[in-house]
Image 1 (cartoon, rainbow, N blue to C red):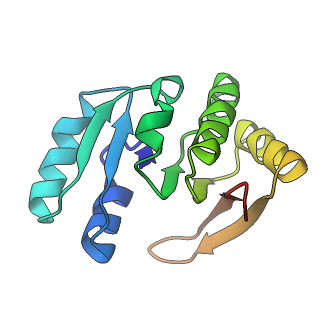
Image 2 (cartoon, helix red, strand yellow):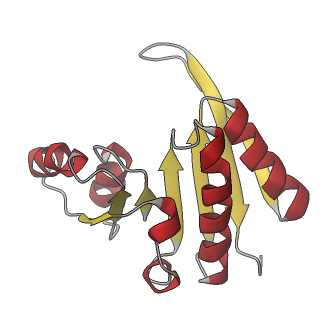
Length: 145
């Protein structure tokens, strides 16, 4: 499950490269018009759900092994909702949570919570092409790991 999927670039990549069953979740249903265009262009298959972080249910989370997201923790108000979503995912037996961000303060707060209170890790990442950019990935493994 990719939360805050927007146009679904990460989901499409995972669906094509790994033949993964992906559900794209975004609060803005209008982004799915663009997502479906990219899905068709890439001959991929994904499903969509129009929901906010707080609206994703335990039952929906139980259908997935991973919860992924990128560039989704940019306002302070998102930290609480993402904490809740990640905790619900772990309780629903999602094995791995990966959230990437360029390193904004709200994301740092989210990461700090999981590093301090669970088995979260903050990983640095960088790419040089097509232009240099760096950031961090919050990795949280299953409560049983």
